[in-house]
Length: 138
Image (tube, helix red, strand yellow):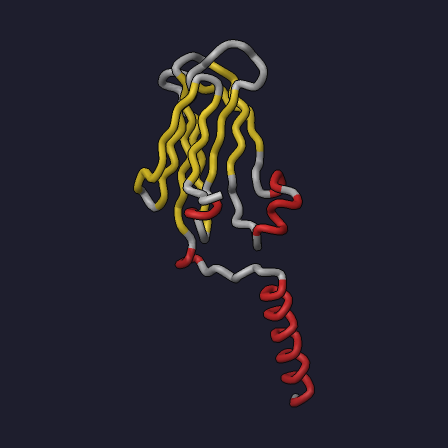
């Protein structure tokens, strides 16, 4: 019995140490924030949209391969046709981000984006060929 408790204790300590060394704080459901991203455009368009759906453990891991944390979708948007997704993030001030682009096409669909955190709009933006909504300081 005593040996089992020691092994279980060591396993827990190793897991906690690994998470701490990796810079990955363990967030509980109470620590997460509801983030909603919305993209629209003034003209009907098939937009390329990138957004953050996961908090990276730290900047070094994120900068090594940002697309791991930034899925890309293609979505039809336009007047009365919004693309919206809800995600949960521990640190939206650092990691919440959505961007829409029309790519190399010369047409300007006039994109609009909205970033909401816990039901409050914290950022809006617009642009002829792309729009970026983010709170990040970098």
